[in-house]
Image 1 (tube, rainbow, N blue to C red):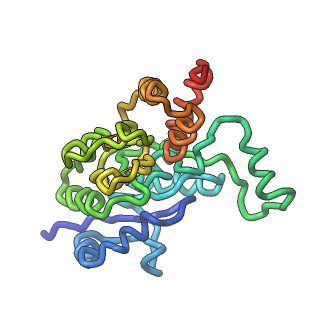
Image 2 (cartoon, protein in one colour; image 1 turned 135 degrees about the horizontal axis):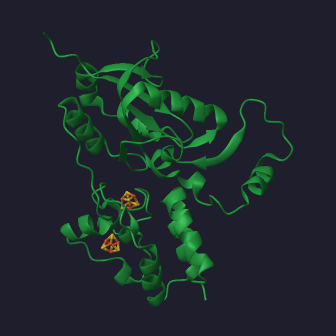
Length: 262
Ligand code: SF4
Ligand code: SF4
């Protein structure tokens, strides 16, 4: 009996679609990817898309409308494994940087004025796991091709993919880069999930945290360390929020509440 190819669906919600484009950009591996799996739904790549049971769903983007929320719940119900791809899906993305500050409606009004929104009711952006259970996270802005392909090949082989759980600093140290923090520039590497190969510090640029926050980050202590080094507290807060999404916004809010600026 021939082994059945896993049924896969690739979906996108609020975001720039960069992760889906990165999948399309797999070029040489794309034929193998489509050959080893049965791609049931991938709106950006094919027109014959089907709903139905899935082995794996890859989902990009944050959830920003009631309609998206319903659609995600439906995808979850049909999928054995649901994987969040990219910063927006994993943590909410830059659109969730000010989440929970109570000023979302004010900002919405500032941008859209009194325009009547008829298509969908917009909500404050949230990551996928604020709505459904997420089995795995592939971070990045956009995701890394190699990390994505490695995860897919492991899933096809019935194995659990290994994803980095440590910060960018580890990859940076392995490359023996001189530390940018010691050169007096702010670098978000200690707070950011590894996986990109510390590409920015390797090129002499500070990490802006686009892979999203590490799972075991200690924001308070990093904040104190940066403050002791003379970095401007407002600047630190802005940079921490940028790609940290909903998860980091909550932690930053706690620091602000405790009067860390004092
Ligand atoms: S340059 Fe940035 S990523 Fe590299 S070790 Fe220093 S703080 Fe960490
Ligand atoms: S900003 Fe940081 S996480 Fe993003 S690619 Fe550069 S080094 Fe990697």
